[in-house]
Image 1 (cartoon, rainbow, N blue to C red):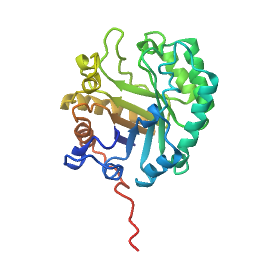
Image 2 (cartoon, helix red, strand yellow):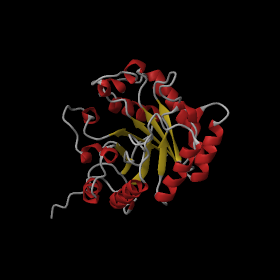
Image 3 (cartoon, one colour):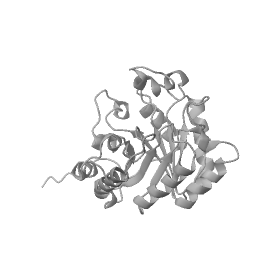
Image 4 (cartoon, rainbow, N blue to C red):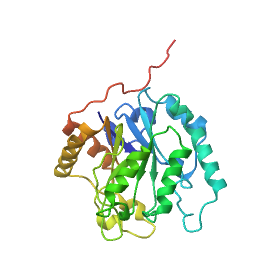
Length: 280
């Protein structure tokens, strides 16, 4: 099975051929999954997540980013207290209940910071992540190339397989000490995730106040989408589902690229559209 989604739901009016921001219900009428970054900045209340859940069809699914405390952002050098970690994980598990109860959580995305390098300390932390989120689907996106160095990356993939962690295959600009290479490797037989950030090297490395508007400013061309199609087809026999997330949306290109890849792959998504309204 192949699924395709985008990051957030409001920023993709071209999904419906318009210019207005989309509601979650409108988005869910076109694509079967969405990635939500809200929990990274602050863990929502379960009631907020329940509203999301009720706005979509029953088979629609969510990928939620792990909270920044859980991914060790901004606290790595000084360390984060065990109490703070335990509190974050406890609140996060509670937040997930509306989705887990309805089988609408596709994955928890741990997008680690660039300074989260391959080390014994960080291998141990990945083990703790699995322990603290028992039975939940965990996906890891590395942003430090040390995880993919020749001679060691196969051991990293074996480690993820043993833990049942989904390895996120990342397409992004990469140069010396900036970005990671695309590694199309499946580590969980149930799910593989591809996250496509674009290939704007200059924007990816941009500094200053406008860096966010430049970082994912990129539109994949037909040749590049065809290359992704080939990779996806090669991976299909190894995994039950491949989920492709487009994050190249600084210029509003993600939705058009997603629809183009959907057509190229010849896939359709059933059970979409808003839930049946009770008119009586």
